[in-house]
Amino acid sequence: MMKNKQVVLWLNLGSPDSPEVSDVRRYLAEFLMDPYVLDIPFLLRVMIVYLAILPTRPAKSAHAYQQVWTEEGAPLIVNSRHFLAKVSPLLDAPSYLAMRYANPSIFSVISQIKQDHPDIQRLVTIPLYPQYAMSSTLTVEKKVEEVMSTVLPNVEVVTIKPFYKDAGYIDALVHSIQPNLNDIEFLLFSYHGLPERQIKKMDASGQWCFSRPDCCRVPNNAHSTCYRHQCYETTRLVCEKLGLGDDKFMVSFQSRLGRDPWVKPYTDEVLEMLAQRGVKRLHVACPAFVADCLETLEEISIRSKEDFIAAGGEDLVYIPCLNDSDEWVKAAAALVTPYLSSPLKDTL
Image 1 (cartoon, rainbow, N blue to C red):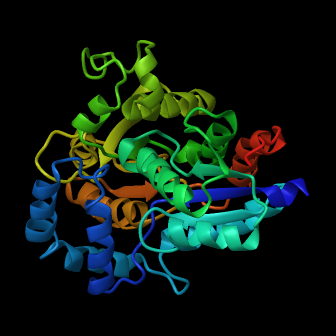
Image 2 (cartoon, rainbow, N blue to C red):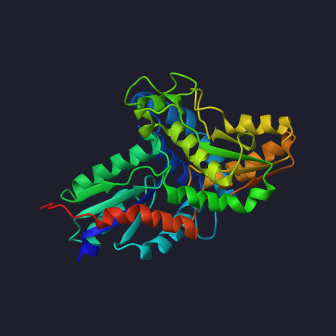
């Protein structure tokens, strides 16, 4: 009976329903109007999204999606479903998958959970973002909280914290990179970018992040919600296990939008710098993503490769995300299992 009283909900970002411009526009509108993504006053957000971005951006994004779309659908959704199919049998509770934007929506999936498991007492949620950020982790948490308050108000919700330094996750990353190790001239860890203001907003002390050049390396309580620190920590742990010296790797941040300062260094500028420095064959890994998606398959594997070669490099080798690799599936199951073993609260 314990199994039916607990349910696991895996959560990720989401993708348009199709690579057509209309679906991409709908997706971008939902995504960019999220106050945790574009964290500016509402009226200004409306003006920027509907007057500056949506008139032109959907067509460009649709073209990008069309280059990586598969027969099964959007890569992020497909890879996440394959992962779900492999991780579900390893858990002593039913597993579901939902996306923060578009489909399957958090509301529709939680409604389905209510129908499938009327005796549910605990929902264990795991945002599939290794490093914490307000535009990924926090917005998912808030959306789940909002939906649960109306659909399943008496059910306990347990959210698994970011797993950026979890041993299983680190080992899975190491295993994904290891086959390339003897061929690596230089390894770039490209993480999704964030505006600096968002990292400062998540700084509980209000004064640590960006206060000094080594703020990410000197221990501080702010690191529990500092995306930049967690990216560097993931990289450090992976490179220690791989035995890579400091002269063989670098961290950068991709996908910036707008004119405000984002976390540096920027991936596009680093690509040019490395090519000019004489790096000919560059390997790139993207540990902020556990499933391959537009940002990895199109932005890095296609566009960044073209940019690197145009700057003087000879080849860019993209190392795929963890997707549904056996190592990652086992590590993910291990993240959830302890929560399924803890006693249920009396929620009624």
